[in-house]
Structures are given as structure tokens and as C-alpha cells.
Length: 134
Image (tube, rainbow, N blue to C red; front, side, top):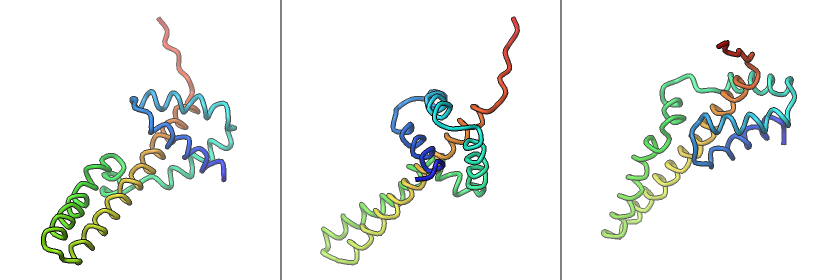
């Protein structure tokens, strides 16, 4: 496993915690600061910047993955309902296809969200600190 993949997995692990983005970034910042070098963080940042979504649909999947997957969950449920009530095997196909698409969209959105959190953390970690004067 490469260092980049390990960083993404650390970010995905932070997404499992119910907290604000700022708290996730702070916790991830501590882990990355200890376990990675400046060169590794810079390489990961460059790779993340090229991978981040540019179009509207991909950004929507990243920020609203559950809302984007909701119609496919509806198709899966409707296919199951129609398949049970009418006994049509074609309706069960809609259930499988809708469920598979919904799960794939949510998984993709989860990965994109982890990459976004990781990019924000890397930018925060290597940004120059400016102290406020009182």
C-alpha cells in the first residue's frame, strides 16, 4: 500500500466519526503530521488536486451522496414491491440494478469526501501559521 493510499484510508477512517469537518481535520492533522514527511504530503496534495472533481455532478456526489443515491434506492424499492406483488422477474432486475447503483454512488461519494477532507488537512498542515497580535 502506497503512502497516498494510506493517507486516504486514514481520512476515510475519520469520516466514520460523527463530528464536524473542523474536528475531523484537526484529528487527521495530528496523525499526518507525525506519520508523514513534508515531501510525502506535497506529493499527496498534488495528486489530490488533480483527482478532485471539476464537474457539477461529481461535486454533487461528493457533497450530497445520499441525496444523489436516493432515486436509485427508490427504483430498487419499487422494483421489489412490483416484483413481489406481480411475480415478474424483470422487476427484481430493477431492484438489483437500482440497489447496485445506489451503493456504488454512495461508496464513490464516500471516497470523494475523504479525499476532500484529506486535501483540506494537507493544505492546513503546510500553510504558514499567522499568529494574531493582541
